[in-house]
Amino acid sequence: MVTSTSPAAPVDLAALNRSLDGAGEIREAGPDDMVDGVPASAVARPSSVAALSALLREATGQGLVTVARGAGTAMSWGNPPERADLLLETTALDRLVEHEAGDLVVVAQAGLAMRDLQERVGRAGQELVADLPPERLAAGSTVGGALATGPSGPRRLQRLALRDLVLGATVVLADGTVTASGGKVVKNVAGYDLAKLMTGSLGTLGVIVQAAFRLHPARPERATVTRAGPTEEVARLARQVVASQLAPAAVELDRAAGSDQATLAVLLEGTHDAVRSRSAEAAALVGGEVGEAPPSWWARMPGGDVTAKATATLTGVSDLLRTARAAEQEHGAAVAVRGSAVGVLHLGITAPDPAAVAAVVGRLRAAAPSAREGTVTVLVAPPELRAGLDAWGPVAGLDLMRSIKNQLDPGRNLAPGRFVGGI
Image 1 (cartoon, rainbow, N blue to C red):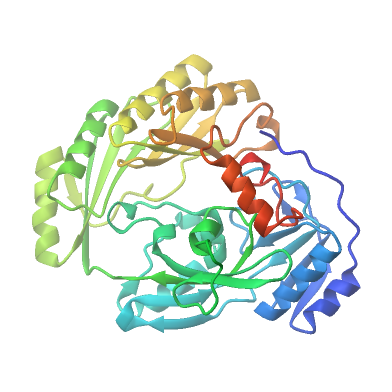
Image 2: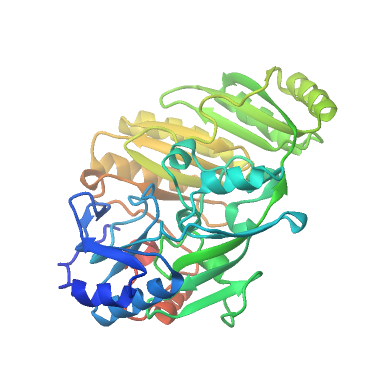
């Protein structure tokens, strides 16, 4: 589904500035202030939660559409919004609020860069296992931005995805209401786990201003076992590693576009002796080589004009790899596949025209025909390739999701159209 855009609403900059009451700044938007090709009219950068709340209340009162922005590393994800009258930057909300090292809990504001959060908890020998793509980390991806996009990194195999590590979140709704749910908060919204609800919603339900996370102790040693070979064989070996007693921290696959070969990378973490022993066992199991560092492609998005996320069952990963190769041959496309052998992968798709892109995505979805068996979601696609492209595919519970949008943002003032079903 391609979201159509509407003309921007008139913006009363003076009233928006008054709402900040000196806690932040507002300016007219420049040529770079866009959301996936949709230009904004104004940009605000509040420096307190109270100012952000008052700003949203004023913007909604003016009938404006507001889109939140952290470091801007994923503004092209999802569909373009219907409008983007006001860009709300969260980067001034960048405090590490609390770090209870003894309880393995950290509380941070939404504008804090994830790399800075990782560095600060790392001083206590701890880590937030988010595993964002290195390119996003380097560009300053924020706590709020990470939650809004719901990343899935290699080490979710043992320690789950970011949404599973969120203990609670404080969120500002479109009408300016500041609300919260989960741990480390004082006021709850009855019936909703806001932290998980907001994760992956692309800012369409509320603006995240603070979140609490569960941390893990950093493991002192690591080793990586790699093995390259025919795609089917590598996928089979990956399943064997996952089913073994090796307790790998991650089992990743990489298949370059157009190739019948793939690479398996198994990450082992723990104490020195345990890692040394288990890596030797893993190398013997897959016939691979042991090294200290993961391969250069580790956790990175594959290249391609279109980026998609695919989920599959453990056995369905082989079907997905096989289908990617078949789709290349049928439609003159290139489909790179990279990600977890337990079934969360990213695809880099390059195809000659919009029809070929849509055909490749449809072919991949046919390999995982239900939400339980797997899904394929288009994350990023340039405008010239969006024609006829359904970014989300079949979605279970869409009516319920629309109902939640209607309850939290009845005026559709927060990034309408970016999320599934035009939410």
